[in-house]
Image (cartoon, rainbow, N blue to C red; front, side, top):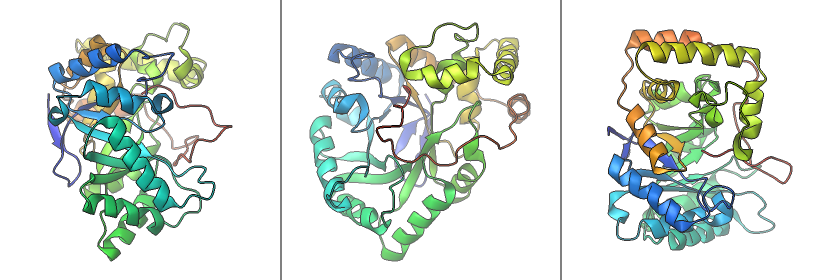
Length: 329
């Protein structure tokens, strides 16, 4: 397993990370023993970067992670998330400090390695969340902070505000990125490359579409139904997948391998966040990291999955009651 620095932090993260949106979800991994098996497989495969959130599995994902890592905490780096949706009179500061303490307790740890704001806050001055985040870093309860679903300009403005006040900056950016979803190339990825911000792609397999198993119209599980269903019904997406599959097969690889290798060919990418339901999936994801694309192959894949910049959101705002839950990572 290869390891890379997370931006300009001192965190050495495995290039394949584990997304734990499945943990604690009754329809996916409800049994703690199954989560334990997946995390033990991560240890075997050299995957040391675990990404969770306080809303995953209705709050149970962090519990699963914490229990599974008892006695093994020093073998892993833990990233989790909070959000500022629905404050209902609670101040951003109080929400952040309360959520941090809750996450520390669930994760059974004294420190969170990477604490990320999950969604873009609505109308909240950045100083109101950057200051308490800095306090958590100063107190030693959080090592580094990051963001999810921001555009490049929003990340830059937040880091400028932090720099002016001597506060901790965002060292990472986590966003939806795959061969089928390339909106971050408009501004966020170039910004991360220029400023040495660690980029963390999620949905690297486009909800499972880039495994190839849904190409023939197979039924899609509930969590990924919306994303994959759209791709199944799109002629261009089917044609792109067929060409990617042929490209990979010619090189003795799978389209899943290609999806990871293509992401890791970007210098800003520190770790690819990939969900896994079984130890076998952990090892398949980890093995994909062994393929290094040449610049020529990278260019060829870019051409196969070319995109004109249209029909993609640049930012993802908070999830509310009328917004469908995110597919499994």
